[in-house]
Image 1: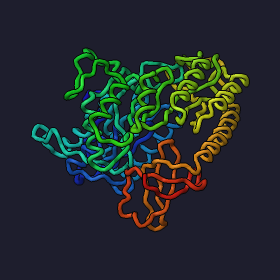
Image 2: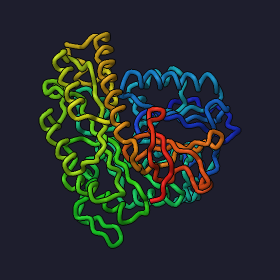
Image 3: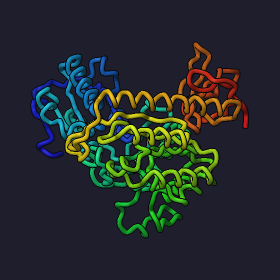
Image 4: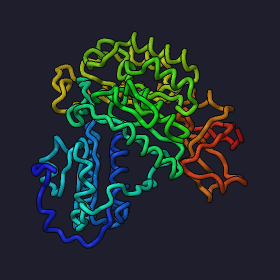
Length: 456
């Protein structure tokens, strides 16, 4: 751990307990990384508690993708410091790189960059007097119990450098996880009862881009002459017992014919792709330095729908990017309507220090951003409602998330990213969180669907 990343004074605190809390903001990659730290600490005998339960130390994994993300990080750090004045505070994640002064001023004890997250558990063990040299290097890491699907980190880093995005500055170069490590983590998840995993990363379409000597990679009896996302998925299909593989966000230009055919021909892969559009205007896409134009995006979406007619498509869109005119925004509205996304995450443009877009002169007024955000959100809500209704009276495969015995209600997420509810019945004792079940939907319910279990 680099000396300049440690903010001193923690040595003056007396450690009496081994209780810790973990707070995470942002993307699924952050969640996966925090889960790994939790597993390592729990396997060493530490106890995870809520930050309101007087933890001995707190690990805060932050995000900085928008100004709201920064605000949430600052608020949580202050809150934990106020409620737990004796706790050792450890911060990590994307927020820390450009907010060192704030962290030092507020009295955070340790700061770890994204690349140093793997050292956090060893630091904590060292504080508590563990002999790391004699510790088990292959502990039996149990699930955290925080999720009903496991987030499997396959990749880190982004080198795309869109003009608005801070992520390449804080996540940096591509770094792919070894394929056999990924397979091992998935097998551990399935052994512990989870039947769906999510392959996550900062830029998963670039999986394997950083590997050298790709032709020598092999897994037992399987040779991997090309090590990319599709090859990794094939390996997972052949070497694990996972029942459903879901992909996190992927760029439109990285969806290959091979990947589409894999999804088409394998029921194990969720027919759901989250593909960021960001804008429907060619002019704004160029300013954003996105690697496509609207025509390319539409053509690729049409191809995806042709190959996989029942595919579910969700997206991210930014409104109020510098220079965005009413015409540009209308292009975005029309694109969202034309593609008919089943769900859209709408973001108001947020200037990020050090990015080219933050220096652009034609910044859009906040009231205009608010107006455009509201219009797009209304369209998104309409498209979402139409999509949910279109899936009524269908049989959906659902990953069980919550079981409410008192309310006689079970809820979970379908393959197509719709929340589904169904009642407990005589088979309730065999229903477990993380399990995949089939539900015949019968009605719209709580922004999702309601139905009954069926045997397939």
